[in-house]
Amino acid sequence: MLGKVVLEEAYERPNMQEKSKHEASLYIAPNDRPRYMRQINDINQERLKLADAHGIGYTIISLTVLGIQGIADKAEAERVATETNNWVAEQIKNHRDRLGAFACLSMHDPAQAANELRRCVQELGFHGALLCSFQHAGPDGETYLFYDQPEYDEFWKALVELDVPLYIHPAAPTGVILEKLYAQRPALIGPPLSFANDVSLHTLGIISNGVFDRFPKLKIIIGHLGEHIPFDFWRIDHWFRDVKKPIANEEGRVMAQKSLYHYFKHNIWLTTSGHFSTPTLKYVVNEIGVDRVLFSVDYPYETTECGCNWWDHDKDAIVEAVGGVDNYYAIGRENAKKLLRLDKFHDSDA
Image (cartoon, rainbow, N blue to C red; front, side):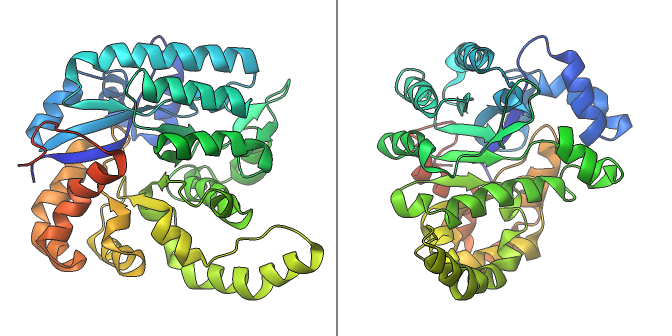
């Protein structure tokens, strides 16, 4: 398929080789690390050559983990976010028919985050923002700022007014979480478990604490075909509705007003990033509808070859799984075009 849109595709900011080596040690097999080190530090050379070779028409790039969320000092986080957004805008400016970006943001101050988001969307032409889990804060970085509390409503309001989505991305466990949960279970760090736990906590917190009820037009994207949540839809919804909501009412607390299914069918989109399974895709489409699913790769943690070969070479099975060729193209690019209000791009109508 030509003109595919991908939107969980990472880059690293300049002069971060030692950090990249650390990330590679966690997520990349030893014999594959030279490829990763080369690709994470490239935006508009090899990335575009691979896109041409594998039918990707438009790539939305985002700062890799831990991103700005790993910077505990407020002033430094805000400065680095602005510098990085300016730098990446310069990197993609001559390839805007092929490349776009999600803003990176400091989340120490919701008002400042909202203003930087506005600048990135209105002045730099970015398509929204991507956050790498919670914001580290405090003198030792062990204060964790989540975004599902009312003090972040100013940020959510800006997203709605700009009509752009927020991509919630996981990050590696650090500090006390790493020490207590994963230090003796390193094989579970990343895609096997920790990433799903990470994003599920944010997503279900945003739902259960009423953020979507306060902002019913808010748009959120999560990757990896839903970070395990779709396979527990019935159980979570049952407990929210029949147990947790009555308890919240008894205690006078805010609780989600609608069903879990409602939010996944009206506010949340899932990508195929790093989850190239046709049976799993079929299940997700059956649960929440084809219009909520977006093709993506998760480059360079996964390879373009792996993601695109699945989509292209397993086409017949995917078409059957998702209910027809129109739905195949919807997931491959049309849903992203609608969600992100994309204009013409390379092979956008191929």
